[in-house]
Length: 542
Image (cartoon, rainbow, N blue to C red; front, top):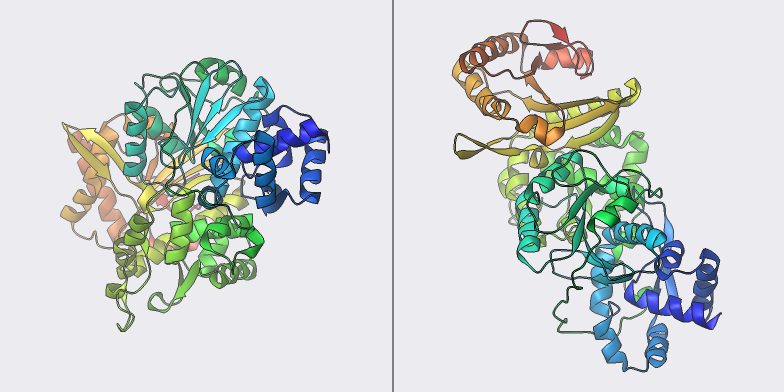
């Protein structure tokens, strides 16, 4: 092993644990070949070990970390006590656990950092445990960029508070914010539109692309997007590297191979990309049936069953008898997702836990611990109908050549807006975005089984009249979403259309509403001609 390349790799893996070899080469400013050789030599000498890791966005690769022997070697190389090294770098047992819990997010941030280094040269880097940013990248020449990632399970209020803390704290220099979807990216842009520092926003799936010329980065208040090179010129200026209070404990990490069983913090490295996607879908569509899960995954029912069995064996998913064997994410699975996305485990369990309140209780919706999961189970017929719709939509979209760019469950489909001096909201049963050949369609879904009286129908439509009276539908989504309303039968659907026409004429607000009923949807499918518009015309969703 070349002394310089090997020492560089040793130091870099101490400041950026779980880099893969190409990311190591870029971040350290050495050639790919030197990085491969240096890491191989570290492994031969027992100074580093690797684990396999992959996500839906990033291919499976080997990620490297220093062993206890490697940390001892680095302490000798730096001529500092091992305890000081453990406190100064993110290599203690406590830090290793944090990074492994967030490993999916770690991989995304590293991919971005490697792309920055490929453009600017060797970078400095620091992880944070509890500050609003996930990490900071120090550019050659002294500029500092904070990286903030919004996880898929991060709730709106919690992430807004995190961004408020970012704004109210010391100047971070510049910020690169990664969002999981278009809607939440637009929400983050509004929250940081007047931030006193440069901010650029990108969809996570676009930011991890290898091509730095791809225009993925968007300013807060200007149309258009920038490539990474221009983004760095826009945001990479000034500010000091933020410091964080030292952890109370910093102990030498044990060998990962010595971990008994599969502890929760090691699961992000043990699960494959397909298993992670399955876990995310079950968390999104709680109490989902296996057939609907298979349709959302785009695989056979047998393949979906194998994935579920694998997750069941790890205690992440369960088939709940009280829900007729439908699927739910366990408390352990909720903890894995919450820690990955830097959200509160207790809050997630309080809302979504399928666990019984009392193990001796007879079982039923009243016995479910999570308040939101309890409500979904209480109205299981309605929940199952929504799941059936989104599953059929996903299957038909693939057959028709449409990409399902976004498909949100009720918890993420809600929208909040100001109207006549107050905060109002709409709470649909789902939201989706479809794309094909440059065309984009968006929709809200309202599955109505209780709206049978004219007054009830008008009350169901009223929040949407307020929402569409504002500019927010287009601001939130870039297009004006359709409102899909499904009624129990043809008579109810006809009545709803009549009420909708009357209410829109009364307040002079046009809502792009499409109405159907359950029997017609079963026959035609979501993409069929089973939708009727205000003018009485037969329409299609896409």
